[in-house]
Image (cartoon, rainbow, N blue to C red; front, side, top):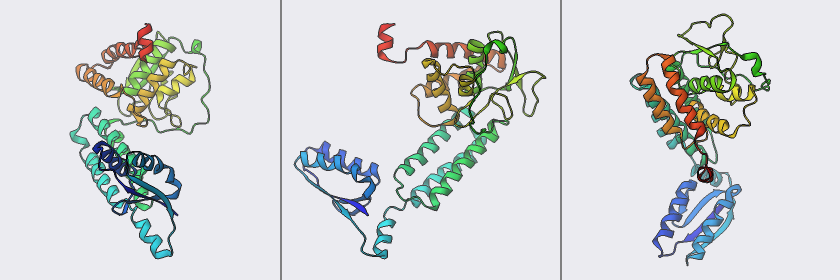
Length: 316
């Protein structure tokens, strides 16, 4: 079953006409003919506010249900929703990124990967009948992500199943040596800041070259096989928050969402572009990882101190 919207747009105001056209395009609903648009019946509610707006401004709109009379008609209607061409165009962008990694700096490569992932998400949102092209696109995204990690982050942690994260006592983790991969980026820098500021103020850090083993007794974080690494959907920073009972701190949770987006994608965070630019600049300035961390500590201190809302800013 399908839902069909019949509309005659008002001649004025022009803004309403433009808004309706854009909304129909955003919904990805194919047109049967001029003024007749189709969606799966399960998405009928998406048509209703558009119909209401058209009617309120002097146009006419009617939402009905449509059933195919036979298999041939059903197949013809389903073909109107085919997104193969959109997936093919998207795959070209993903392949171009994978093939061009050698010419990109890591921050730019990760920015482009997020854009590619968002592009796929946008197609999936209007792919009401996903088929093989959708599955291939998802596999391409995973392959592109793996290629990026292989190029920039040897030893990038492999996600472990989320069977619950044990709560640890910070008193047992004082004055320790902590080890992670050299040339730290967002998750490792943020994790090191969290360790130094909230877990182990006297922490010493060891930066591991590719393939190097951590010193005996060192606590590893954010590399494959480390004690503190990706678990389920959580990046290393979020695992440390949960491990030491810090996830209840709203400002740390806000930073966690920011780190998650820059490291693994997902829900965009407004401050992400600014933080990424600042950290990229610091990494370009400081070839020594201890010096880089010292500079990054001030950045994350400022992020935590920053008000998270206009009301908080006013009251401060």
